[in-house]
Length: 359
Image 1 (cartoon, helix red, strand yellow):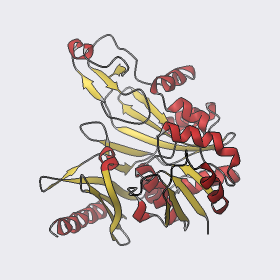
Image 2 (cartoon, one colour):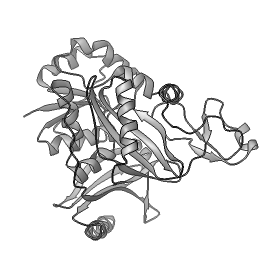
Image 3 (spheres, one colour):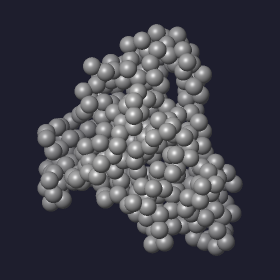
Image 4 (cartoon, helix red, strand yellow):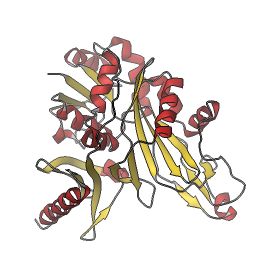
């Protein structure tokens, strides 16, 4: 059995652990936090700081099939780059691509260099859309309606034209020569522009080609997700993230059968898969939070304050996970042979959650 090691125990780590278990792998977590959020959904946990005890990680790596950084702590990621040659297993991460994707201004310069359509920077009149310049955080992202509001914005924030339309996502896996594009999903966002729900959708051919070119021109050796807005004027790419994403890969798995983790592992060992058209299945992935006794959609940013994440319920078409701590949050994964069946399963999941809330 393959053993995958995760460096970081929050939502990215949960995503990889989930897909690893679906592929029959064992999952080891390394996190300096003794109460790492996902400690109860992995097979084994080691609690130490890799930057202070690198020799321990190097020794443990003899037992792993691969290591994946599942965090966005820049110090941790740069340290892994420094010791990568000492590890006894592959480190599934493209540091060069991450250097581009971690900075949204740097990313937009890259988009412009290969003529990828993206929202205009610093438009001449409102409304504006402002967002943080680094990492994949949405904290602080919002619409600005007036020049007076804009004057109060932190000058480091990225200011773009406000483009309306569904937010869509595609993952690409590459080995530096060949690139495979996965299944498109729709990312449903909340009022602070954080993802609270993901659903599958038919893949737009133009978006697929744009995503392919973004990976090819980066010589991607790893995984990258591409987010865009499907506006009335066409696709507008808003960001790339060259690290294992959260939430969308589970929907890709249930809707198309594609396991992006096994794709990634294969890319480091052999050829990238030749992607065939898939029969799209129906599913929904959603986060709900208890708020004053009610269930309210919530984005992933609140998970970072959780203390535990564990499986609450599972059958063939419904999975429910529960996060406890400062907030109580439920993650629902519902599948079915039709949209109506998914809706029925979603309703069943809500009833299971309501019964849990009464305990």
